[in-house]
Image 1 (cartoon, rainbow, N blue to C red):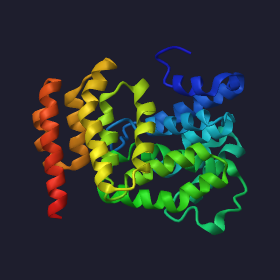
Image 2 (image 1 turned 180 degrees about the vertical axis):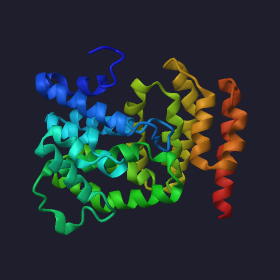
Image 3 (image 1 turned 90 degrees about the vertical axis):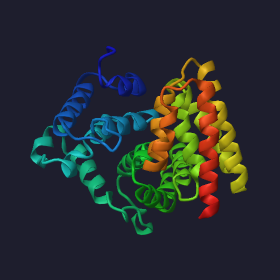
Length: 294
């Protein structure tokens, strides 16, 4: 496993469970996915193949080391999202094909209604939950109406399904992310966007703690105050952790709030941390004033 290997995160998460023929098939699945999704982009601008790879990594991190479901994770959007015929995927075996067909059957807004609780293959459900989890992790790049729809859908269908499947950690993260993307939960989204300042190795840990604290605060006003304090302290924390990227933060917050806020945040680009703090205070005041007018 070398540093330039695109499967490095998956192999690290899967440990020693992938070797020999199993590893060959997983690598082959990635190659097929990369070729079939070539030229496709996600809303974030990232190559589309980064999504199925992330889904496979999520499964491996949850202890799902079965090479068949990892192959299915890497290929899960190939049949519906590209012109790939089923016959081209026959090399992966009937079990992988059954997982892909089961996933396609669930891949609609009503895919997990109560009368589908008797799924014959729980791996299909695990795959669908991992897919939704990664989509919610990157939901900030979606239009607000679509984010809200996916958030409500997740709370109604996917969080209970995760509990039934015994994937409590996945269910808890789905719940937090969905709650953060509901209308009126701007503090959640602001904290998540502001956290782009932090180094990747520290971001997930801090976000988990902050979002859990936000969820425990009953008052909207107190949640806003808590989020404002975090935003204003974020540059100092980022500096302590060895990273400060005002331009990147401005881009993230601009995408979160829409074109008008993006223009307002243009002043952040290239600023020193102290000046950026002043601009952020002004931004928070404008956001609060806008909400009071509504």
